[in-house]
Length: 255
Image 1: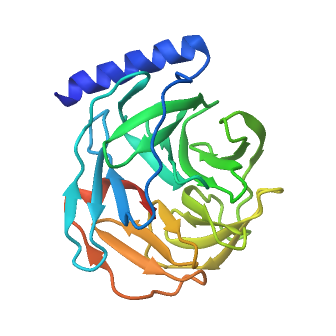
Image 2 (image 1 turned 90 degrees about the horizontal axis):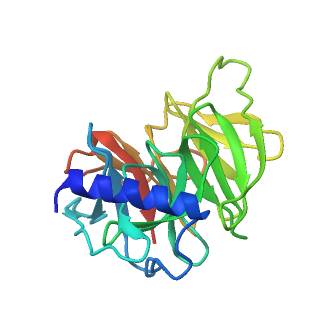
Image 3 (image 1 turned 135 degrees about the horizontal axis):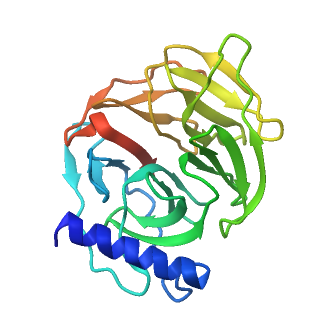
């Protein structure tokens, strides 16, 4: 099927689901099995649909994931801004061009709408208790319940030396700290209650979405490379050059 056909199908599915107040309650998205590895998505310029790749963390070899057959409220994923894992292993995604949060199957490139959002988002992180956090394109931090309903919102407060601090990726560490990458490569912490950003380290070499695993290992994207750092922002291991147009990479998840 063509990208254009999939894009129209997903847009139609979203409009029907929104009119009904949400996704098809009978539709389910399977969790990403433990040991699946690293997946990323890239937003090809001008495309309204996502591609997902699985990357070998040693060789850097990547495999484009197939597009499955959509049904019952599930369709090919639209272009994605960011990804994160729920505690149950289901991947959550925020769309790049539509104000929605989605459940995503990265192995079959299929998505189900979880809920509409008040504005476009560019980052998403899920706390250990299932509480969802997103950051909008206007740099506002939202807290959502497990069903994607807005509980609170607050504007992010930049460090004193940074007049602007657009967040391009975030995730929770095992101890519950919310970390973020700010445009320009600032590795930061966010106080979710106040919205205050605190810079941990500058120039960490990450530029977009990242994932923190259960051991505190950070895997993040920077152009055509997958890089690893620790929670202090120090490089660990070596950068992996990945193929597939990843200069536009916009989401990464590991399990």
